[in-house]
Length: 307
Image (cartoon, rainbow, N blue to C red):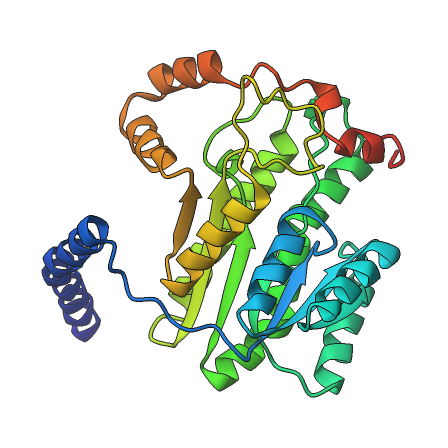
């Protein structure tokens, strides 16, 4: 009986809060005045930081006055990127780590912890896209895709989140994709992993409700990086990494739960969620990016090495 009353009280509180919440959201939308927190003098861990989106995160966070801990599989490239940041007067540390290897990820955590650093912003950015029909992929290839795009995120969160909980401060950022919401040609494994990345943030928000921890998932359209090498920019207007990262960091500073870039996809997502699935599927099938073929994804080169 008491439990039932407690639940009823919780629902009533939520219902009464909704008008205030939506009023604030309307004010923020019209006047672009959403409060932004300062992110400075913090230790920020970024995966896949040697190039593309990760490198931009490292640069922009470093320019804000933070120490960036840059992680990548490519030892040479990550060292060069960190030296470049240091030459500009920024604080940066390089780490070489295979995110599909739990022992190496644990070693990364232990190295950072032993140095006395507490990571307060974790950016799970590293990813891979094979761009292959799942029926043509081996189990190793499927597992590699899921391990890079999802499992590594979970393992890093498992290691670094407890300290954030202890300090009652911290922000976890998952770089997912609109492919987590909408189907993408020849990317069953990728879509599944990115959908998982999105729901990871939802679950963690509920798990840590009432704390000062924040969780943001970033879902962009196609980004002009080396992950997609053969994109027809005449048909598909890809986002520049610097623009994506600027928008993502703005969303993080505003403690947004979901950052979708470009913003028009908020509306498209809403429309496709309320219309019948049979109609939505026809729409998505007709508007899919036909310029994407197997050769578009740089992951095809890696796919050939992972049998």
